[in-house]
Structure formats: C-alpha cells, structure tokens
Amino acid sequence: AYPLLLQNLQSSIDSGEWADVSLVQSALARIDYVRKNYSSAAKRYSLARQLASSSKRDILLSDALEGGAKAFAALGRYDSAYYYQKEYLLLRTNLEARKY
Image 1 (cartoon, rainbow, N blue to C red):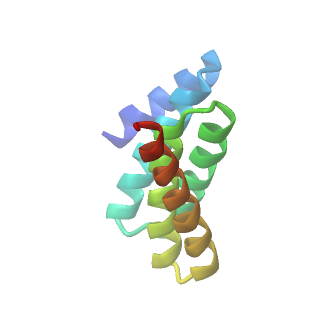
Image 2 (cartoon, one colour; image 1 turned 30 degrees about the vertical axis):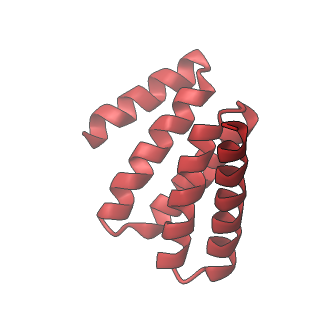
Image 3 (cartoon, rainbow, N blue to C red; image 1 turned 90 degrees about the vertical axis):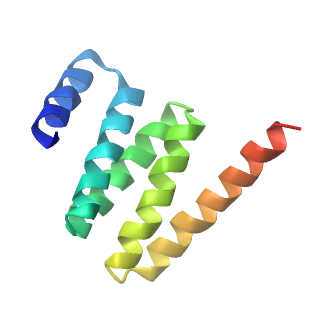
C-alpha cells in the first residue's frame, strides 16, 4: 500500500491537488506510526496539517492534528503533542457546535 500511496502523492503534487496531498500524507503518516517510525509520522502529519489548514478542509485538519499529537507524544515531544491535541480538541468542539 505504501508504494501506491507514494505514487498517488506524486500525482496529487503534480496536479496541484493540495487537499489530496494532505490526505495521502496523513495516510502515509498513519502507516509510519504503525511501523513505529514516529519521526517520519510526525513530519508527515505536520505537512498534512499545513496543507489541510491552507485548503480549509476541517476533516483533513482534524485527522492530521489527532495523528500528530500521537506521533509527537511517541517521540517524547510533549510540547508539540500538547499543541496538536489542544488544536484538535478546539477544532472538534467547533465542528460539533456547527451541527446545532
């Protein structure tokens, strides 16, 4: 799955589909995290967060923030993990409030 996602990533970059790039980066980060490659996961989640934020895709941003919090915590970078978790919870609260 990883090589296929890397191909998809390159295709999305070539076509300027930044929301798709964010989605693929999060998927690759999730695989890196499961493989215990926390440094790569944190980098990919960080990039996914930046891209999702600039493309105004809250669901993608939510995924990147939640995953980033876990990856940074696994690295012992608790300041970054706290930031990602705080931003994730704030975003989720805002998304829930929009429902009502």
